[in-house]
Length: 441
Image 1 (cartoon, rainbow, N blue to C red):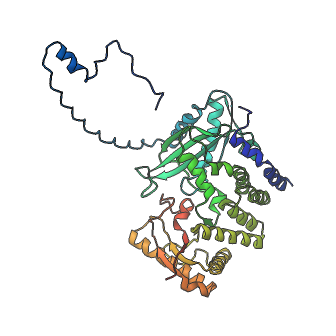
Image 2 (image 1 turned 90 degrees about the horizontal axis):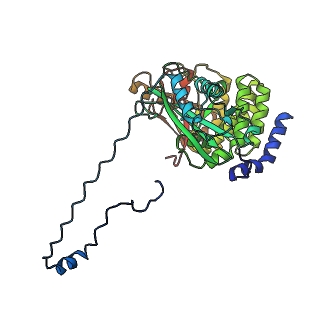
Image 3 (image 1 turned 60 degrees about the vertical axis):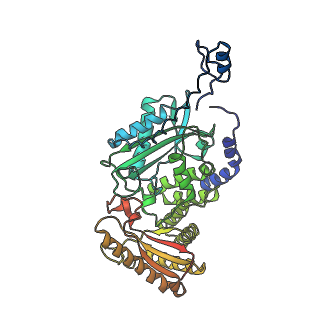
């Protein structure tokens, strides 16, 4: 690995002081060719030929009519997506497609935890892929050393693997009935600042466990987060040779701390998780959804109710600023009543959403969503009734907000997961969303 300074490597060195502070808080078309050579002499220019013919007494031949241009070729039809293969084979195909294309030599490699390419959620399946990457590297690629994704490792400018594992339909799109999983895996060389390898595979849904890991399954709020979007773009939109997405690079220090915090929370080490989330928030690009969710969850688990509510208010403000705040209220099947009526968390969530929206004088659209199970007409009706129920509850907490809200039902038309499992794996499909609208009329 080159030790020379590069633009991206310098970013890490310039961020070193911020990182040390955070860690202290935790510890305490090809080359153009000329004409092809030929043994056949080129014909003289057309302007010379008539004079040459006249000198020999021959009649000048009429000029040949120009040939009609050939019809333009029809654009090639897009190739259909490859047939999905069993889950483990898809993982092997994708990993081999990346690790086998790394430049020659020894490589220090970290895996930035893989995510769902729509929701940004880490699942049992993505975690198992990470473990499989490590085992395949050890078995087949002696030049690849996989090390944990930590801030210290990031500062060594390693190769970073990023990947998305996303449920798709038969046309490889994240709409309609999901029939397979699209697996994208990319290698980013931090020292060179470029994408050096990419592979895409498709997996059959059988044997895929898309249950969210605890830190994601427990999170109350979902919204589109710029750091997650930068991660997804670094995988799905990148081509080999492209420079690495700058927003992704800028957030790597925070991402490493968040990764450690998520791991601690998943192992029920809530005190350590909170310390790591606090450190992540203090680092560059630390104001992000995963941090606010993590601070809410870890404080809740530690019984720090006031700190938890402060974190939830930050979540609400973040969602309202990005104009998308999805909250996971769990309703009884086929009902507008909460599954756990009187849930103190729900009472607090509703109060804080109402107060923050009222304080900002926002006009809100409250939209209910359902999974695809059941008829479309029933789901449309049920999602609207649930949105109306939430609207009424918010108006009770903040009467001034009442006239500035409308309720809407989307049924299953905007599913994020779309598998129709109706369990913890697709809870986001049964969310209630709050969007700021430009007019209260």
